[in-house]
Length: 371
Image 1 (cartoon, rainbow, N blue to C red):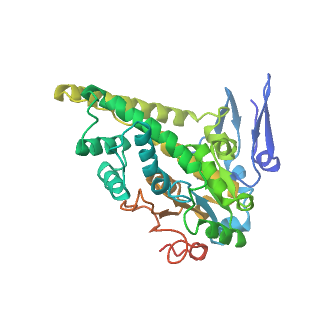
Image 2: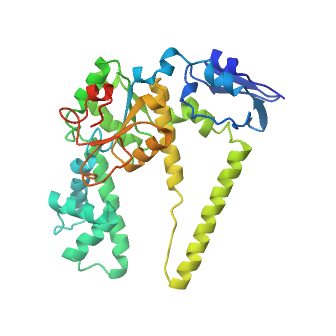
Image 3: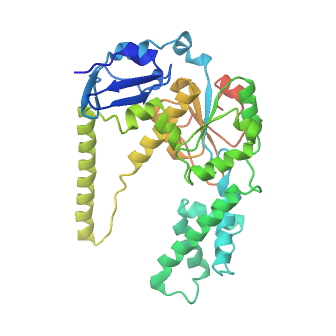
């Protein structure tokens, strides 16, 4: 049986694992092992690499890279920023206008959403865009030439045109970053504080998120780190936990199988009850996978910043980011946007209205003054 030990993990930038048929390479960044989640005393000593079993000393592997600063996280700080709602209030600048562009392209001259109308629809629909359309046309009347049975197809056409318009507007030069965002990044750089911008779980995709980041300019972009899906996959955490070459321990595999089976059973029972009540139900089991993806992005962000997770601060604009940060013990501050102006974030360390002044500043982060 092949064996891989802790010292090997720490002395090489790349570890090689050789089998009888091929050699696999796993990138292991130096000094990054402390970004892994804490392992309990019962953590299995076996990891499975493509049907091969390897042993390592978990104490040696996770202690030999510690430095004096690791034992005093207050001396370190890194800032992780979401894009939508944080760097740019995309919903205020692009979402409403994108609907109006879609209405024009489809010849719906009677439809034009002013900001008060848009805000009211967002509030009443909880941001569900199909529901927004339903509420609006129920109020003003549907197109007279539209058969009732084609309403769903009509709404899908509007949302398709809206998405195209949104992408164009978000990437256009007329869309600007939130006031104070550039100064905040400059202050962080002057203070030697790493800034990582997360695109890996951006709602509108990596391409749109990166086009927004480009508005910072080449000089600022050279001073930050961007973590998208590729960067998450290349991170040590991503390779160890999410990588194709590494699978879970037997206990973890059994736990996942049990969870999947439980979800399927819940769905079956719900459908059985619904059939008696003549209802249609669908239990969402994707939220845990989404949270897993965001957690991976946050851990990768901490890894690229080379700062322990508890010493990073996530500046979030979404509930999902807050939930993931809470899951791994990362402090989180929410910046309100037009889409979250009335939302509550009880698990966040603070909820602020923007950058600078009485709101979010680097000095407040350094002094851990969240509000």
